[in-house]
Amino acid sequence: MSSSVRGEGSSGAPGPEALRALSLALEQSPLAVVMTRCDASIQYANPRFCELTGYDACDISFLKIFDLSAGGGEEYLMWSVISKGDTWQGELPGRRQNGHRFWASVFVAPVRDETGELTYYLGVFDEIPEPHVEFPADRAPDIVVLLDVNGKILYTNRTVAGMTREQVTGATVFSYVPPNHQERMRGYIELAIRTKRPVSYEIPSAGPHGTTDYYLSQLIPIERDGDVIALSIATIDLSRRASQPQAPPRRSRRPARRRPSRDVAQELSVRESQVLELLVEGLTNRQVAQRLKVSLHTVDHHVSHILKKLAVPNRTAAALAARRTGLL
Image 1 (cartoon, one colour):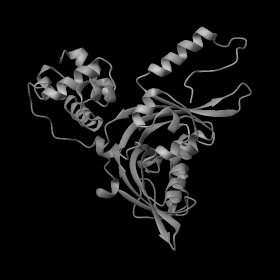
Image 2 (cartoon, rainbow, N blue to C red; image 1 turned 90 degrees about the vertical axis):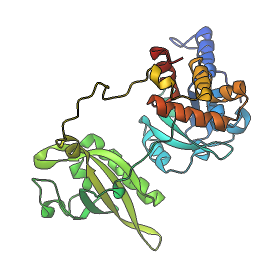
Image 3 (tube, rainbow, N blue to C red; image 1 turned 45 degrees about the vertical axis):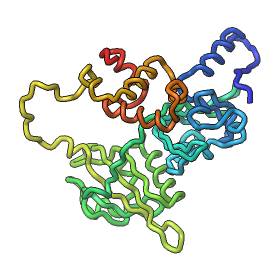
Image 4 (cartoon, helix red, strand yellow; image 1 turned 90 degrees about the horizontal axis):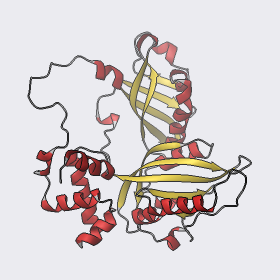
């Protein structure tokens, strides 16, 4: 599969030199870039995307983007959003060719032709450490709601101040979500019904006495004879818990939030320091593995430890922190 950028010249269109520069930028990008057709089949993948997934350019051209999914179900919600012409941003689990799972921060946008018709989807991936997800069902929820498959509220154990259970029962859950988030809520319900698996999400909704609060919720499908007949929602009010008074902190000469400093360098092992030094040089995980003559899995393990010790979200932030604070 060719990785060059092609296009016919037209008035106002980039010239050959600009297109060559764009092609080089994609080829050398530290971020994984992929372009798919409207049926999700992969049309183009840059070298970083091939490195991230473990497939070479020839093999990956025969795949659909869903073939690289680790099966979390969130990718179908993504597709339901972008297929309507909207952009999507979030975190997704993927599976490499060798079966190992990875996580990536993803941005996907539709690409339209001169007539405005949707023709491709462009995705940009940045590898991140596997996130730790705490599900609301693991903690005592503030509110439990039972819905039918259309979002109608059948039961709630309690409501927020200013509402009665009689008022809420029989209304739709969309009535209590801001208009600009109602489509998201529909997507979560459709995803839970389609996959028959719990879906966790954060969304604003009605708070006490007409206010709007932010909630962490888990949507759980209820099945009978293999079909989803209803859904339950376990909800935690994040806004109220965040605003609860807390004990005043003890005085300390240490800063409340740890920032990377030279002291952190003492926590890094010799091998981790070597890996960080190569990250600062801009090397990918695979290039680091080749330079140090170790497996890619070993480098992934070291990078995860480095990110945790430096308290940063990704390898790019780790390199920036090392440069800014003089760790190396």
